[in-house]
Length: 165
Ligand SMILES: CC(C)(COP(=O)(O)OP(=O)(O)OC[C@H]1O[C@@H](n2cnc3c(N)ncnc32)[C@H](O)[C@@H]1OP(=O)(O)O)[C@@H](O)C(=O)NCCC(=O)NCCS
Image: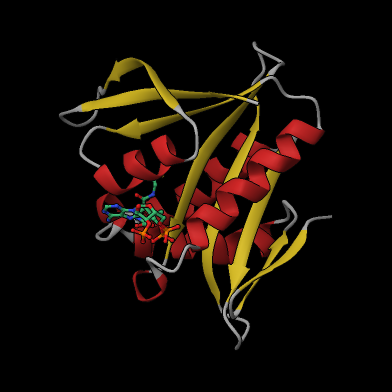
């Protein structure tokens, strides 16, 4: 079970129960610009997608809490079904009040350290081309751009980024 401290923040691994994932799904809607105006129905559907996406998989969900115990950041991923040697880093974000304090870098390093320990050969993540902060951080943490995917539901491209462990 991962537990760590980053400055004033406590980081720990959380489980996959609806109770544990619900606050994370709520935070997701506060941090992702594309989710800010999601209806209640869409928010509930996302929680279901999250549960279905992680259930039965070799998953890791990391969460960071402020000194008052409020969830302020998260990062999650899972072992891919068709490429067992690949850990797919799916989603993550930091509440706007807590950005540029190295929190996401800390979550990233914990995730990568864990994945290496578990025997994964590489990490893959898909980053939108219009998200420079995420791209810069990923490049700094050892990812390389290794392809692209066109979106079907919005303009733009997602860059496939990979890091050998
Ligand atoms: C991208 C995001 C996760 C970064 O979180 P964070 O905790 O602020 O990142 P860190 O403090 O660990 O940043 C580490 C480094 O990454 C780079 N970086 C982070 N955000 C950046 C930005 N907006 N612009 C340029 N560089 C950025 C910087 O080099 C930074 O180091 P510095 O602060 O010493 O200059 C956060 O801005 C966020 O939640 N964005 C919205 C959601 C999102 O894009 N999620 C990812 C896709 S699912």
